[in-house]
Image (cartoon, rainbow, N blue to C red; front, side, top):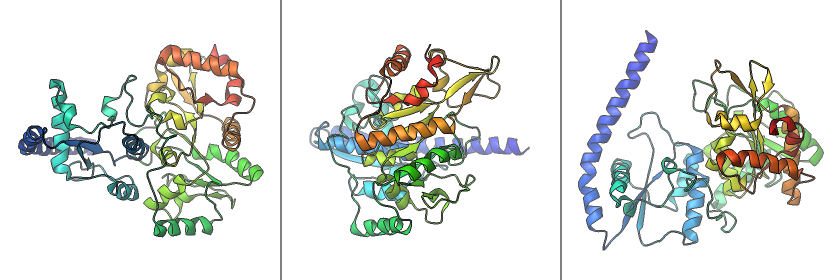
Length: 416
């Protein structure tokens, strides 16, 4: 009975949304016509600032603003954005209010009930060859393709050419430095680490991108001990607390200090970040800090991330339950197993997370790269072999990205 009520609730909610949105489309049609008619004398373009997910509103907007600074896009138009708050969608929220405040200092944001309908009206008019005249040239994720990747991919290599867009005020710096001093942290001398779980979005299933944060601890502790560093766990996972007694590792994720500001500030000022495929890894990239992407289950989506800031990856493995053998990557890619959000328990295949030794070695490889600017004793033959397998199926492989050398050396059979 409860399940029936839930389905009825979702159905009624969708019906209400569709009715409201259709009404707003009709209400704003005259404004769309007006914008079209004034085009010769005044250009207005509309875009969506996707604040519902941190991965959609952080590095993607950073890249776009850098593109504007380099005059990659024409500046002869008035850009007006809308944000996805809770006015129309009942289940959405702002992923980081501090970041929204910072973007408001740089862009013009209009009321959603006007500019979201206009956005979709103009998207529809692209079918007639005129819609793009009224859309901000931000590469929306809905339009992603291998030929034209969405905005999260730095296709113009602007991150290496332009300084970060976000600047902290003196008051913000004071708050941030007070937190750092409280735990003996220094900018650029601590690493951040996190793992995506089903808790943040309250997923009903475990995503192929999910993993256990505790499997990282062995490598994190070893690095902090041997390299005199500290580490801060970020992200949101209240059910998974770190049961460790180590002053060099701060479980900020489950502390009373958490705030949207510190979520941003800590990631922005770390040395590098260790994490899984999720939005939390993109805040450090805004300050040109790089990501060690571990437990990379959806590796087939490597062209859907800011791969220029991901020098090292550690993919998950797939096991055939019938034979209890790992499946080689050529077969994995051919079957599309790394492009699925979820592999059912009833499937013939199981996703196997990286173990703590694999993660530990990858962390040390990453730290050496950040300190020295190059990888130490990487096996180019194995790297090229993995790259060729990947390219044969996906038709690309980012030149700036390598696979953990330890992982490849110990899984050569998966490259057959």
